[in-house]
Length: 470
Image (cartoon, helix red, strand yellow):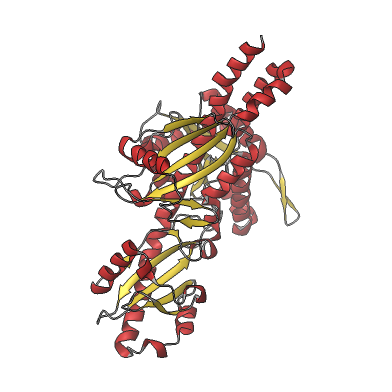
């Protein structure tokens, strides 16, 4: 009987937990991709304009040692300034820790810098981890007209945009390793275009370590790049019973070439030994353990985190409610469909009833408070990975992922109505509001975002008409 229970546990529960962990990591990387893409479009333009200011200064005064870099740093706000000479050494810098850094010690990167110094155009790298400070940064480069120096700008992404801290996949990895005894460690590998060079990225920094990364791991990473398939390796040595799962997160350019700069191979180290001892301790309540595991899985699906908080650096957020807006929603939905990350989804179209009367009766300040209150309610009661946006005026959209049936969606709608219908006080006045909510299901009601929003809008108006008749 014990052996039978053990087989059930390994064949059903353990794979389910592993699948949850792996999907969570891939979705965290996906959210980071969307967020970085939006932010970088803004930063590229800003860095180019600031670099041009430095070039104009060089034309007026080529003696870079007489420049007041502090003055430029104050003008450029969140940016640090570096000047690289022809020996590829940083000779001036507002970030003292990088002063004296010699890029000639990094042959591949040195080759790239020399090419940029001899050119005549502006270059901006993608967001990445700094080799020296181990911070998430973005760098840009502009050569001086005489090609004697390379003018470099950098910006600390987390410091200048605290909201991006929520997109840190390392914090999600730490959460999973703390809360799953099954999971011992998560490691992120990056690689070059051919897969011949592999590096480890951790929260402590970045390591270009061909000598320290085991040869078999490098070969595994390269194999995954070529085959685009995950690899699982079991190690039942005397050190323990471990399973190493390597899963690819590969991005592609529009011409279907591998975007290796923004691709990763994720290594999940599962410690199987704890499962044997856990089963021995709890074999008499095994049925209860299964029930608890299933309940935890359901609760996990209902507890997804919000995608993004307010950021002043992009045009993808509503300034009043700090919710994402239409443009972010369109990009996010497109990313989900492109990567085929969800089989069934639902869109809720939420309209505040008689909102104009609230504005006319209590004033626009009260109306704004009501909108922020509704946004707060939606963010609080929905799952953390359900996306809530302000569609416009008094209208909100909610994207529910991982939906099994319409009944599940109706339960969510019921919960939203219960919370919104609760009276609340503002300036010693009691305000009561209600909402009309429409539903559309993907792919049942449409395959494009426009079709789904239209169906949800129509459903909302039917609900509003039904409420008025009642």
